[in-house]
Image 1 (cartoon, rainbow, N blue to C red):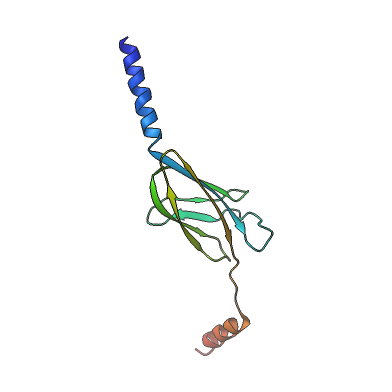
Image 2 (tube, rainbow, N blue to C red):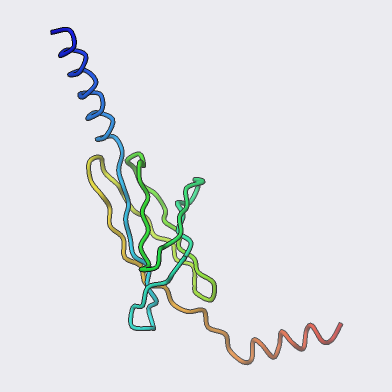
Length: 120
């Protein structure tokens, strides 16, 4: 009987712990290239040291988060950085799909930058 009580307490504490953490899963794609996945894009939670990179399919996962509101920051070289607020609740997995836009440069910006550099 004593072993049964110990086992019950351990299982109950494990279940209680698992319901206090949440996960965020997501997919990052290119907004202009037929929603192709962005491989190895950087995804982080602002104000924390938590970050991940997307895989070969543009997917990322954050596990064992505390419930609350987070700012998700996604960046990729040559694309505009995007930030969105997400709310995660206990016992639920938040799902995020983001499409990033390529950074655009105008020729006039490049020309004026070259003139500024060349004038020194």
